[in-house]
Length: 180
Image (cartoon, rainbow, N blue to C red; front, side):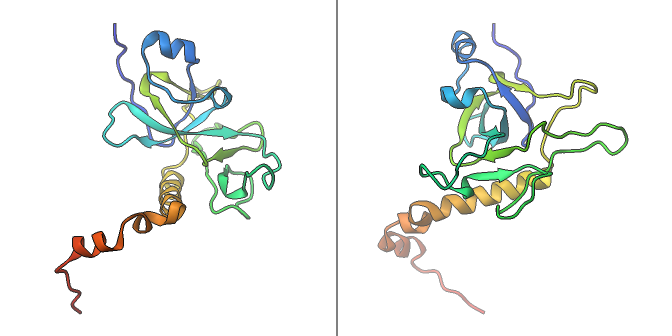
């Protein structure tokens, strides 16, 4: 019997079911073993794939990032860590009408050098033990993250336009002219 799909929000903080449970239930997940034990941040729904979500892992250990081919631009800090020298900082939602305050136990970072794809039913939303509030990142932080990831993707591999043959580009825009 198929499970009813739950509503997952962009910016939700989740855990992922173990691989054996995903396999047994027929739920898609391409998270590799080492990343599976980490919490993940839901970046957004995968285009043209309803029920599949783009996620990135959250880590509390910032290893020697200038060694082994790992770079500082592969990490985005969560508040209260300082933004500098990182391009942005992610902030968790706070409830200003109660004593509820969401914050990771350790300084934490979003690792953005690799995204994973996970089915809705494999995501377990992280909630505050005392209040039951779901942990999530502010919508403004999610928007900034998506924009940053989009710019980063355009810069990699020569950029989107760099991947196109210039002749094909000229043919595609053929008769367009710019008027002032």
